[in-house]
Image (tube, rainbow, N blue to C red; front, side):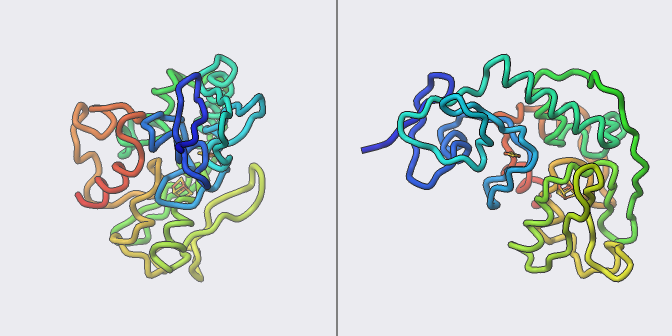
Length: 240
Ligand code: SF4
Ligand code: FES
């Protein structure tokens, strides 16, 4: 017999071992998320997927689904929490959407639109972070990294290269590249690696093809992130 829990009153079937996120996405019920991608093991760091399960705040991408659980996702309280987290991500980095090559295909931007966040209300930090353009086919703009660790997981689990890691803690946390110089150009990373295609923002970019889609034809111009999702984004970018 199929087991169910509820999200905002909607019954969601699930199988043993699935998280709230797994079951919700499989049932076509979108829960905003950034560090989660169904192709990788959950990481639970961004907290954008926070829901209330039987009254407790939990990360939907790591918390197991359970029979009869009542999960809230769309309450005003959770919207406020989610918007606060998104605002922090925008002001902590340098996300200048109008000039970013990933604009229109950026998951942070798309999730913020989905959550109806039009402009950050917090002061921007404007951190001084560099761009690494040392690789012939790829660039890293550290000012846009949201530390989701998707590139870390992709490089380790799919590409078998472990090129990326996160160093430091708290506000000092930052993306590291494993090469003697710390530059991407001194690694064996290839443009065909999975890690080159999973960045949800414009931090890891493929060179020579920026702004290749006009406004109106970009990934999230056509359909919102709740419909497009992230797997398609990764595949579409990879196959171009
Ligand atoms: Fe995530 Fe992109 Fe930063 Fe890697 S570079 S941790 S994929 S935001
Ligand atoms: Fe669940 Fe980031 S998507 S914590």
